[in-house]
Length: 58
Image (cartoon, helix red, strand yellow):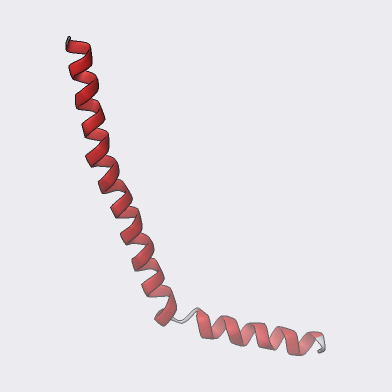
């Protein structure tokens, strides 16, 4: 395979997989996972803060 055919094949693959059909769901999934992580962090982080306050109070 010559370099020109490799470059054209890679460009074709990039054009195929960088359409919004693939990019938009990937962004949505990434954002959902990030939000889920921060929600868990807030829930369990607040739990630990309350325990630390109780430990200092006693």
